[in-house]
Image (tube, rainbow, N blue to C red):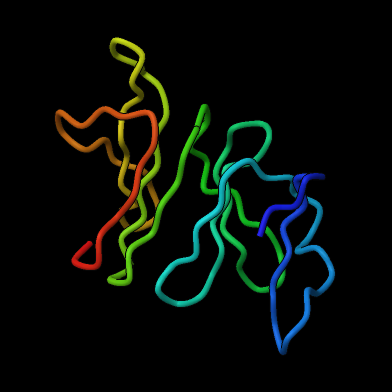
Length: 111
């Protein structure tokens, strides 16, 4: 969860724990392995791995979404007619999805 102070919290064993690290977030998703991914307040993507935020370096990011199959998508620049380019996380780098532009992104159960 992202609180009003932009800190990321995890709900576990019936209660909210301490913030996950010091990154502040605008948008959050959780991947198939249970790892949170965020768009930070500086519009950069991060993944929570080994108790730290690891930069996934999509600068200018706006939205992020994960599917149960493990697919991760985000939106960033360049923008076309107000929509941002949709990117897919592919083996440690972001790849633009051909002819895909949006303000926000959501992923279905089939990825």
